[in-house]
Every structure is written in C-alpha cells, then in structure tokens.
Length: 339
Image (cartoon, rainbow, N blue to C red; front, side):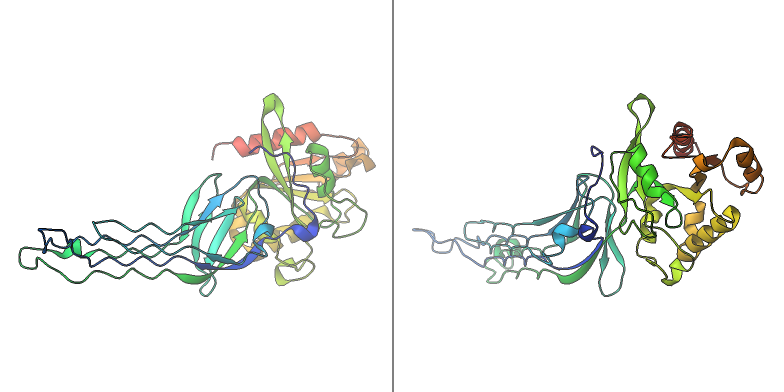
C-alpha cells in the first residue's frame, strides 16, 4: 500500500451502497447464406453474435470509501452486436468496470448471499456476467442438413440489485470505549488526522493510518468508533462499525488509566465483540492502558496486579510518548509471530 493517511470527512465515509447492475444481452447469431455469381447456393456463412458486456469489480488501494458510487447506482453494460455474413462475429458489448476499495464484499440484495470479495489491488472479478452471443447458422450445418435456416438468439443479460459493503482492511484494530485515546494514538504514530476532543463519540467514522516501523517497515492501524456496553444490541453507534474489526489481523484494546475498573471494562469490550461475532475472539490481542502519564511507577505496579492475565499489557501515553516504541514492537511481533 502506498498511502499515509485517509483524511476523509465523516459525512463522506460511505461503507454501504445498493446498486442496480444490468449486464448486456448477447447478440443473435446470423442465419445468412453466401451468395455470389456462379455460386447461387454457397451455403451457410452466418457469424456468431457478440457477448454482452460484463459488470466487473476491480480493487483499488487508493480508495477507502464507496462514496463515488452513492450517486451512480445504475450500472448498465452494452449489449453484444448481432453476427454478420461471411462468418463475421458481432462485437462484444463494452464492459463496465467499477473501482472499489480493498475489503469490499458484494452481496445479492434479495438473499444476502455473498457473490464476490475484493481484497487485492488490481484484482478483477466479474460481478454480473453478460449474456452469451448466439451461434450463427454455420455451426449447424452437417452432411444431412447442409442449409440450416436457423441460428441461436443471444442470451439475455442479468438485471439484479447488488449490495456493496466495505469492511476496512487493516493490520491492527483499535478497540475501546469513547475517549480511551484511540484517535490520539493514531495521530501520534501515523500521518492520519482524526478528530480529537474531550467528549464521547468524537470519532464517528473509522480512520486509517500507516504506522512507520523500524527499517522502513510499516503496518496499517484502524481507529474504530468507540464501543459502549450494549453496542451489539444497537446502543450508541451500534454495530455499524463493528464489522470493520472483522478484517483486522489483531486487536489492540485500549482502556484509560483513570477507569474505575479496567478488568471489568475489558470484559465488557470482549463481551460486545463476542455477541457481534464470536470469531473475533480468535484474533491476537494486546491491551494498552492509556494516559499513563497521569500515574507514577509505584501506582502502575499496583495496577498491574489487577489487570487481565490472558494477554500482553503495556502502559502508554500518546502525549508524553511513553512506551510508544515498545507498543510498536509488541504489535510487530504479534503480527509476525508464527501460529
């Protein structure tokens, strides 16, 4: 990936669109007979019809929202051209290529079944295939039928409603309650500039940033809007953005040092993820206790005894740059650890 940040306004982040895809009809085959002076019965020479245009999805790593499709919800490909004389095949209908961000899933709008998934830059997958062109009458000649007067019609294209849903691809997903310091950390370790303020739900859309690491290495970090208890049931911002965590390689739980009960808060976050999708708990996890500049070493040692023991933990301060390098090291080791 060759991006550094994604400075998109919150009202421009679109991760769900429904579009009407109509592929082209195939051209009809020709039922023509060759005629020339001295050859009044030259035989069948009807060409095949051209294929109808496809609707194709193509991955583009420079996109991170479906905004460009919000007002282009009708995608119609061209029909194939009918076959001609002298075995001339009709031209294919022009394909429609839709550029989408990595992590886009296409679903059937009626059944919800997944049709295709785009995960790589330049990946091209036919979403709605065009109709096949019909065969010309030349294909149907035989020893017992030397002058077939019929040809195949072209197949009809497909007219369907498709849902495009984006789930952000990132190496690390930040999980925490509002005001846990997620946006501040992302702004410190990357070039992303998320909105930061001292009130809940400052982050209303996901933010991505590329974190520079040692020896010119890097990884992608995603700041997901804050979770509150009951999010899986629709409270707060609900589950709208929880789906983006599904595509993260690992989860970094972030809890403020001034939380009245860090262990209980961590348990609530885990429970919300489990209710949304139990498979999220199979991902690697780290715990970062934020705003650690507010406490001294003695109090930090006392608090460690109360923390969950089933995952690595680090005390950090984005403002004071405390243990940020150590956090990066832990993330990199976790991302590259063999299963």
